[in-house]
Image (cartoon, rainbow, N blue to C red):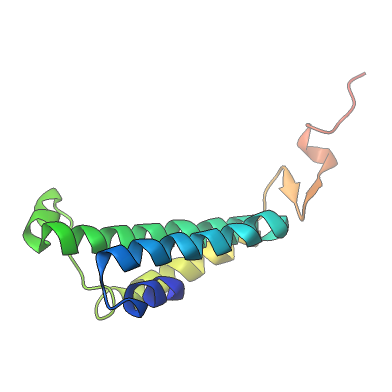
Length: 122
């Protein structure tokens, strides 16, 4: 979420610079994706959120606000209106991704014996 702000404003909203910095940040995030597998859900949420935010802003910048709103989804400026809602959604997804709700198959990287996948057949 915050990295998308950096990507968007470090190049002063120029399309080519935004695409290059988006690629650079995703490249760096995939290093953590490969190096620290225990944080896989959180890293994927960061990457997907970045692509969605930057992609929608580039769509509005390229096509215009009127064309972007034709699908029925209103346009909210990223920084002013929708930022608190997006932070709330991101924090909720981070809460889920860290396993606070739990998974019946995989918990803390260990197969649970009660899942049936690791049990021995007679």
